Length: 583
Image: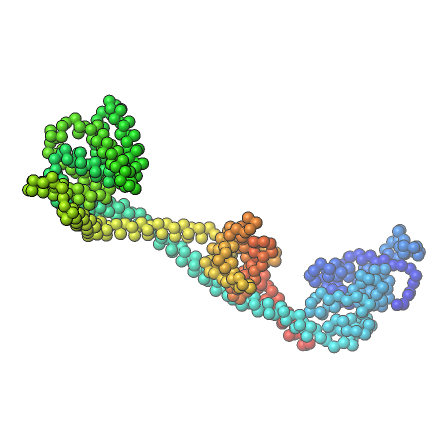
């Protein structure tokens, strides 16, 4: 380095005019982005008014405190002589290479960010792609280096090119997404109107259909009752229940039917034989309650007598006492059985039938009746004691069984064949179900209307679509706006979707929460982050913390202005490269 003076200089740049700094070798243009370039270029806006502090002595610190700035002629900038302490008067030579912070800017490098230290200027090694650092002498000197800027630009653009092509295809697909989203929105509007019309129509029709069902059911029940009454009458007439005298019905048939029917039969009996003036018959009321409790404990709800003859005898004794007390405490007991009218006799027989029918003891009642008639017939004809032979007992049992089977078959046939209300019931059921489904669909449509699907509903076509991704032995699956899973393990249901415009471009994420619990007690959850791409791809999934998953999903739905700028910038750079070396 040439030493012109022992004076130590410190440059001060005073800005007066807005001249371009493009002509100053080694200095970036003022229009460069990035802050560092602008700050460096600002010093050279006016080279005609370049000032430095000139020291009038050589103190130990190299600068005199009261030194005043002196102008440095523009001819001494890049004159290969270091005038300023910080070397800023030599940005394009190696004269101030002793200054660590002094760098040379390669103005034609494709990266627009390449700086080399000033010591590497004119050192015989080509650092800038066009050899700008090896132009010996001052401005306009010829470089000794080959121009490799185009090759370097292509190399730098290789990765950018692949990404730009991906973005380009993604932007093209984004247009299709937006068209599909618009169609879906229009379909949703039409669908909502159609559903609301259907709902109104069903709501008007339901009351009429319901009234029609009620009318049909009433007619059906009436008809069934008539048919059933005929079957029941046939049963009662066949066993001759009404022809028995009142004493036999009250003292033999009724207690036996109630004992076999259990506590259910007793409760029915109480309703049909209410206590006469209970206020005056408190003792009878208490007695009936106590006996009812004891009877229930012995035979239960359904009429089992016990595990052996002794227990059966105890149950029978309690049952006879209970039934006797109920009947004697009722209004019926106010008259002697022989004085009861024929209609009262029929009423008692009917009550016995109802009890047997309700407790599924019709076969027992028929057996009891047939057996009594057989005894009376045998006693009257043969002057015997009325005890039946084994064959007669078997015949009685078979007859009772056939009659009961006939009654049950007829009743079942009536239930199956008499279905007058069924068409109306089906119409009402279908209309009710359709109304419920319609209301649920309307609520779903309204919910979708309030949900955000990104700018111009770009994410709407993804709703309900499911995407799998295999990681080792696990298969992850994301169903957009619905749920996320790891095999059969829930990673959560849809919680929210967020889409916003940030400085770096569009940002979107979807959260699934409330998944299957983990050993630590927390619920599994998944966060899906979206990026631009030409197709929908579930790209990656990680578990940064226990039971908390993060996924990367590529989709054309997120391609936007940022990606379009990137594509345009890459195209512009290729155009610039194509123009290198021309003209």
